[in-house]
Length: 473
Ligand SMILES: [Zn+2]
Image (cartoon, rainbow, N blue to C red; front, side, top):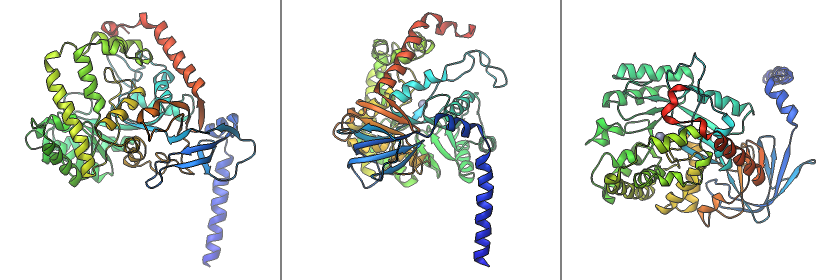
């Protein structure tokens, strides 16, 4: 009986999914057009970022379509070979704190009305791709991001995978909530819209913060965010169950004037006990200090030419940190405390992930992640720990570790081929030979061409955009 049942089930599954397979869905047709490409990277040193394996030397990796088919197994016919001799293969990088630009309007903004200020999505994504960032965690809630995510998934644009958050605060903006019952309702609406992640913000009161995080727990949603200023003097109360991750080390330095290592250890223990992870986001304060010193830091930034001219204009003409010289000593003390926090969190064994706040002034998408990795190593992580913070650990927190974050057969082919070993020097993450983005191979020449196209467009159109006139668009 049981055997017959299983047989029937098997036939049903075969017929059902067989029929489904034959349906000419759009994505299937597009895949067929592209043909099934198989790449083999030969003689390469793999840094898989799995928990126990450091390096697999002289290995062969087969990539079929958008997946890693095998490691050190047979090589299929008709494959395209990439010589990996003397090179290093690491998983695509994940930036756990970004703010992207998206289609919209600088005056009234309603999703039911078309954007008056559209962007070329590829131009927004090229800096990520060129910097091997293959997954991003978006901490702004913007309707336009969903459209971008879909363009990438359909293969119309080459860009990173996107994890999106719903935003909850109490400052009069969208998602503004003043009391626990409104907070819970807002969480339920976000869940209904399909969000898995929530970002909580600075102006929530204690009761609402607690209610939002509790409701998220009930609905199996994860919470990242700021620690509201309402917790000043009693920050331990913010560590409630299901507060999953602090979005900046600054959230902690704002809560104390005691910048001792002992205080950093106290914060680390609170986080450890509550299973709250930390995105140190050291780049953020470094760039605040840079800009407070002089906006030449932005003007001379090699990545600036890859930023849309409207935002180059914003960063240079409407910059919150310009002429803040008087605050530099305070910022510097905070930055020093953030480094202590990284050391204390490492000592306590609290997971930390790399995130940059890309999109805030001076912090450029993609490029900033390499800076952050170097800052993390400067703060006391080993190069390997820094790489883990931008690969396996973010994938774990985002609950996509079965798909990305390590190099293993069956996972998506988000891979970086480097000319030099990043375990020896973390700056070697910038020595790029090529990148697989969801199985699509881009060598150094392809990447340079994409960057040049972007810089050319920005330069050619720079006269057309002025931040002070943004409402005229
Ligand atoms: Zn941010």
